[in-house]
Every structure is written in C-alpha cells, then in structure tokens.
Length: 71
Image (cartoon, rainbow, N blue to C red; front, side, top):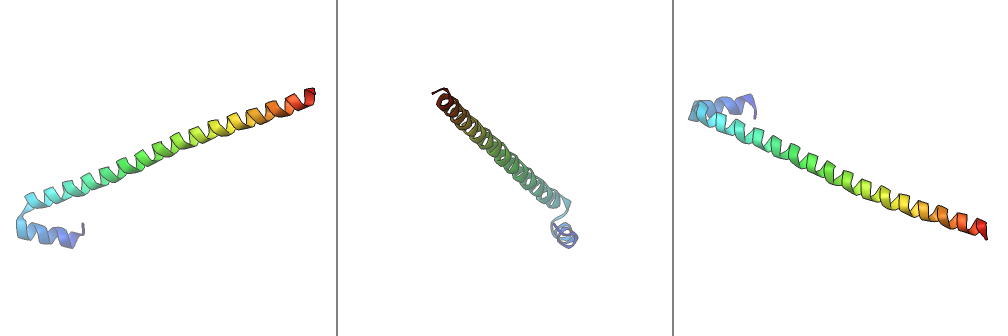
C-alpha cells in the first residue's frame, strides 16, 4: 500500500479501515509465506524419494556387476 493510498483511506474512512487494510495485507503476506514453505517441503519430499530410488537403482546395478564378475 502506498503512502498516498494510505493518506486517502485515512482521510476518507478514518484509521480503523486503514488498520483493517493493513491486516489484510499482512495476512496475504503470511499466506504467501506459508505457500512457499509448503512448496519447499513438498519438493524436499520429492527430492528425498528420487534420491532413494536412484540409490536403490545404483545399488542394484552395482550388485549386478558384482554378480557378473563372480561368473
């Protein structure tokens, strides 16, 4: 919210409405922060899963190579 808009709202409606507007802006910022954190958490879970799959695949590949060397 710009200072000009803030002054306009104070002049027109008084400070109570301005405070409500600030709460809405703060709430929106908190919502965006929560969404960002949620996306990061989801990506961390996906990355962890992908790493486990890759590790299991690579371990299986290593075991296959070891088995071939035994024969």
